Structures are given as structure tokens and as C-alpha cells.
Amino acid sequence: MIVNGHAWTYGDDVNTDVIFPGKYTYTLTNVNEFARHALEDLDPDFARMVQPDDVIVAGKNFGCGSSREQAAVCIKMAGVRVIVACSFGRIFFRNCVNNGVLPIVCPPAVAAIAKGDPVSIDLESNLIITANGEYSFPPLSPSVMAIIDAGGLIPMLRRKLGTENLPMPEVKFGSGD
Image (cartoon, rainbow, N blue to C red):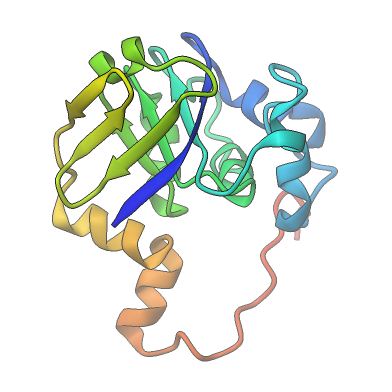
């Protein structure tokens, strides 16, 4: 599979409070509304201009901070399926995987990609292809890729259990219920 999009570039230490602003943590509970607020305090154009399959390219420690799962969800709901970074916050990395967003660690690619550059991610060859060259990245484990391929942990488990055709309960965040 190949993901083709344009790059949205960010620096080091972008935390989950900036990816999904803290002011919405307990007021927005419908995941379909999350994308409108993705990265709004860091990049007011992102939510309005991002296109499906665009790629976030970031520096070190992307997704540091709280364990707010909404940060990964808002990125997915905005249509981003791949994030390339120098490194990730540990919990954010796992939240991305669990929500079907592929986190790729590849510092040389990050250094070569500018905002707006076309980027192709070849998931079978583990290559990031840009106008400035091709950059290999280490493959993730087969179990992690199975989660990504299914669109997240819950869809993968539903598929394994044969329950993918049953109605999915509405997912709400921060409702306190």
C-alpha cells in the first residue's frame, strides 16, 4: 500500500495539549467533531486545509505530554494516516497505533521534507519517497501492522472475533459516563 499526500511540518516537543487543545477534552465528546480542532493552537490552517492522506512530519518527541487519546483520534479524523517524526512520545505512539495511524520514525526524511512537499509512503517497501530522495524506515512488527491495516485495535479485534458486522456502540470521550 502507498499513501500519497502533502507534508505538514512541525518542530520538536509538540505535545498532546497542542495537538488536541485541552479546552475541548471534556466538552467535545463526539469524535466526528475532533478534526475541526486538530492542531488549531499550533497551526490554525491545518484543520481547514488538510487533505485525506496528507502526512504530518515532525521533530523529536511528537505527542509528548498527557496520555490524551483524543490527540491521535483528531489526527485520524482529519484524514492523516501517517506521521513521520524523529521520535514520538511513548503513549502517543501507542495511541496512534491503537487508532490506526501509522507512526514512522525516520529522522533523515524529516530533515529533507518541507511543508507542502509531496510525500509518498510505501508501506510494503518501508520507504518514504520525496523529491529529495528515498528514505528507508524500520518496519513495525507484524502484530502492529495488523492493527494499522485494520484501522485500529478495536476494528482488528472485531474482525478477529467475527463481530465486525455488528453495530458499533457510539464512542464518546470525556463524558464521565
